[in-house]
Amino acid sequence: MPPSESLSEDSVGLCLGLDSIGPASPHGDRVVYWMHSSHRTIHNPALEAAIVISNRNQLPLDVLFILDPALPDVNLRSFSFLLQGLDDVDRELRSRGIHLSVRRGDTITELLKHLQDASALIMDQGYLRHHRQWYRLLDKELDIPTLQCEGNIVIPVRTASDKEEWSAATFRRKIAAKTLSYLKPVQEQVPLISSRGFWGEGLEWKGHEWHLRWMDMQGSANPSPNLYGGQDAAERILEEFMRKRFDCYHNSRNDPNLRCCSELSPYLHLGQISPVRIAMEVMKAGGPNSEAYLEQLIVRRELSINHVSFNVNYDRYQGLPEWCRKSLDEHSKDAREYIYSFTDLERGRTHDPYWNAAQRQMLSTGIMHNYMRMYWGKKILEWSETPQQAFENALRLNNRYELDGRDANGYTGVAWCFGKHDRPWKERPIFGTVRYMNDRGLERKFDMAAYIQMTLEEKDRIEKLVS
Ligand SMILES: Cc1cc2nc3c(=O)[nH]c(=O)nc-3n(C[C@H](O)[C@H](O)[C@H](O)COP(=O)(O)OP(=O)(O)OC[C@H]3O[C@@H](n4cnc5c(N)ncnc54)[C@H](O)[C@@H]3O)c2cc1C
Image 1 (cartoon, rainbow, N blue to C red):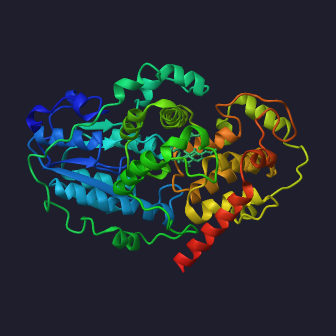
Image 2 (image 1 turned 60 degrees about the vertical axis):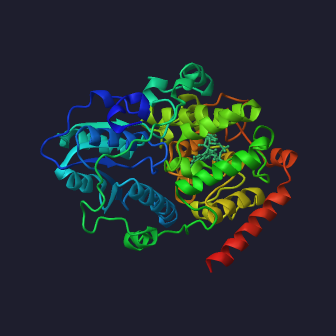
Image 3 (image 1 turned 180 degrees about the vertical axis):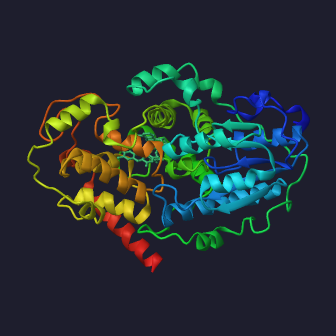
């Protein structure tokens, strides 16, 4: 499509307001797209909208990425995965004649510095506490036209629902009729003016290894040798999943010994792949696998985004539904057969070989299998002095070691273990009416000896690789 014709919202996806954004400020010399939640060039509505706006105003486009080492819970593992992804972004932007600027430091300070000569700002939308804080600050400081795009979700969060949803059932009903209209490709735009080499001495991308040294990140979690970050890797994994593993998704995705899941959550977390793009691929296949996958990718994932968007205490014990807190509090003095400190848990030193194996899998690879995550969280609740302590420890471990941690899904997944989005079950010690899980359930369903063996072999292999 010729660039001058491609001005409608429909052609770039979830950028509500694209058609009504005012002309760029005459005081600046460029349009800036601040990429912070959709780290990709494929199927990225904010990037395409930014090109539309820069073409419309006959200005070059500058894409900005800010590396902020003070963001909550980031470490060497999460940052190396993120930086690997920016290699792909830089290469692809370069090939389209677009400049990538990189700054390091406090997000808002660096952003405001960078916007001094900007004529308009386009940015992603995130849903967590720190994102909301950024947007509040920007609201006060900015006097240039600004557009925000929801590029990491299928249905815009407030279109899906205007309140915190009670359960997957209530949310599913609300989005059922809306989903299809959002499953559309994003039309790639062509920039009229190249911005390569325009600005920013010292601000250009120098490769992920250089930037990792520059960031000087410390942390207990080493980079994952199993998973490589970026849109290229995400596309490869999606292709391989559809070809080799999709057929067993519906029946066997819960088995921790089988690789029937997509393993795309770290990529979705950083927006290195679009959920709309994945959903469109999966829909082509159809059938029960497709239905089961879309339930997770759209209903469950976007229910998590609904949770963090509408519940101000999404990352605190107080954010749990009242019935859960009441029941857990009533049982908080129940005798516990085992109590483990944060360090015991972190080192995987419990009496339970299945739990230790799950913890080992997360420590060494950066990914714990979905089904084991539920068991893992439930047991932390069972083995902690108080449910409040359990909630904090589970979140801290999840955010520190999981490549997909620090995500709406992580906060909601942990909260689920404490009853969120679930219903009351039969009352029992410690858990009250919150759903309980036990090791006999694991043994009945899966070959747990094989799971332990697999995590030991994985750990050995990775230790050899790292040393
Ligand atoms: C205690 C606990 C902690 C969790 N922490 C995280 C986390 O930090 N980050 C994270 O992305 N997910 C988290 N989850 C949800 C879920 O376990 C992962 O999304 C899933 O294991 C990712 O693997 P996959 O990409 O192979 O999933 P697939 O089965 O291939 O599913 C595709 C996508 O659907 C979404 N999805 C799948 N299961 C769920 C679910 N139960 N809830 C919401 N979305 C889902 C994910 O985005 C996933 O990538 C957590 C769950 C629990 C119980």
